[in-house]
Image 1 (cartoon, rainbow, N blue to C red):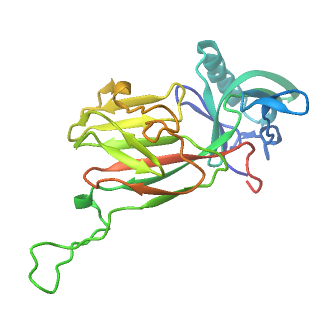
Image 2 (cartoon, rainbow, N blue to C red):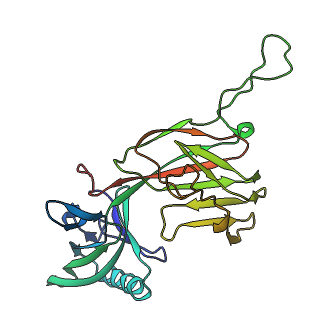
Image 3 (cartoon, one colour):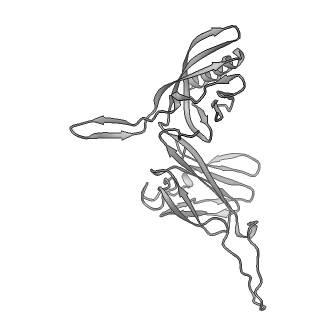
Length: 275
């Protein structure tokens, strides 16, 4: 069975398909639901919204059941959701209640009430673009003649593919040193108006809510850099820092003078069959 676990808002992990806990194929997680309003021969307000599911889990270790309830109660009380992971796929979630049955000495089953907050599942994809002078795949080649320059191939990938059928959130990590770094993905320019010192980096995360831009110094200190992201005229304007990546094949262009990690989500309303 695929690895399945609940990760609390504090990072504590409780296995749901592990040595002492079992949810099998996770039938309760395999639905797919759009929210909508029906009108006269049409549907309006179509969107992904949070919805509730039931998940049956069998516990052979009472201590593990107690631990799951403890971390789930913490997340609910402080309104800080955890995350349900199923294989490579994940979604923000609360475990809002349990209903026990089949109680025997040392084991029992529980029906978990799970609130799936994103209304869809995501899987991260990522590539790293190295600074040209640091790229381990780049070899500097001299011409047969004594030319005053070297030849070298372009650094890193020059395209990515979004396998989602809909636009998907992106996340970037820009590494210093860099001054006003930017990268072009598809038709959009993702740019920061700031200087990143050597050893520092900036995380631009369009997958969170609220969205964030954070600078991390070489010593590990964090600074909110949200105002440094270019906004253009908003989504679709061609220069929006949180622009989702469009479906399909997208070209990448950047100067090569700094390093950058590029990550994007594959989104699906239902967990893929075969897991």
